[in-house]
Amino acid sequence: MEPVSTLLIGKGSMKLPDTSTFEPLLPQATNVRLSVAAQNSLSTHTTYELPCERERVGDPPRGLQLMDVVHRFTLRRCIASPLNESLLELAERKEQAAAECEMRLVHIPPGPGSNAGVVKTNKGGYQSYPDLFEANSPNLCGELRDLVSVALTEVVALELDARGHSTSYEGDEWLAPAPGELHEAYAWLNVNRGANWNAVHQHDVERWSAVYFVSDGEPNAPGFPCPESGHMLFRCGPKGRPAHPATDLAQPSPFSHSYMSVAPTPGSLWIFPGSVPHAVMQAVLPDGVAEAEQARISIGVNFLDAKPPPPHGIPPVDPIA
Image (cartoon, rainbow, N blue to C red; front, side, top):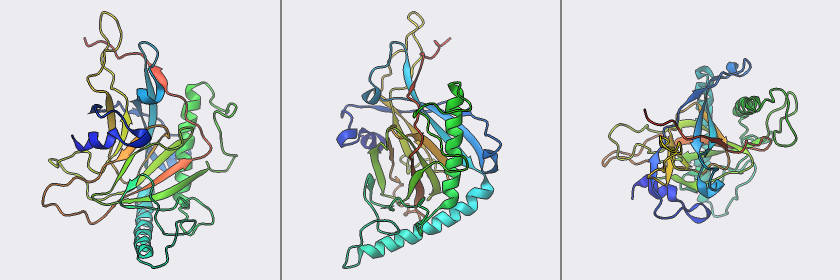
């Protein structure tokens, strides 16, 4: 079985049938105009539509395909470069301190201000305690906290505008921070080296999540055994096929699932519904290629005060002419 299939089938509550098959998904990119305020820190905002897994949402209405929307932002280079340098230094320092903690006779548990690592979906590597956005934390990453709040404000404004509510939040479905305040969130460091990976998992299914990429380690190259080496993978439902000309209904895909591969490009920020299953591939290098000197480093974020919209349905794609 291919490395991608082995990873994406998952385990435990995320496990799919062993007969599941996967094909890569290359969704169409839609560029979104940034607000004037966001242009001070962000350079692009792009959205992608991902087909939902039937295991999560059930069978859609006849002739429709349910889709989630994920958002990709890029930071302005003049902001991303110094920010990534400081985050890289923080990650390396905390990873080294965590290794020293492991060698001590007295175990130091993870907690606020601690460098001890936590184990959740990460298989190897280092994951920090999620205190990077806490005001009293010695590990506070205040600049990144501000940036992800700006980006989520763009996401929520886009969703509200699509529903005709450009200036107000309705009930508890759309929760906004108070004027002048940031979206509430917590964040943690991820440090992955060659053989480290993250199993398929979800976050809070009622809230937005995000990942910001600090370092891609040694990027993959053409001809490597696995083009998704070191990438984050969104696990999706079957890819849409052209509608049948006679029935105007979408034809079934020969694959049970699809996936979108996301390269860990430094300075890129992805915001996605926490319900979307995702994983991180290990680095698959050719024989004789040494381990990259620099790790793949990212910041994981869970938001606390904004709720993603439910998946939306689209009709089958047009017949092939």
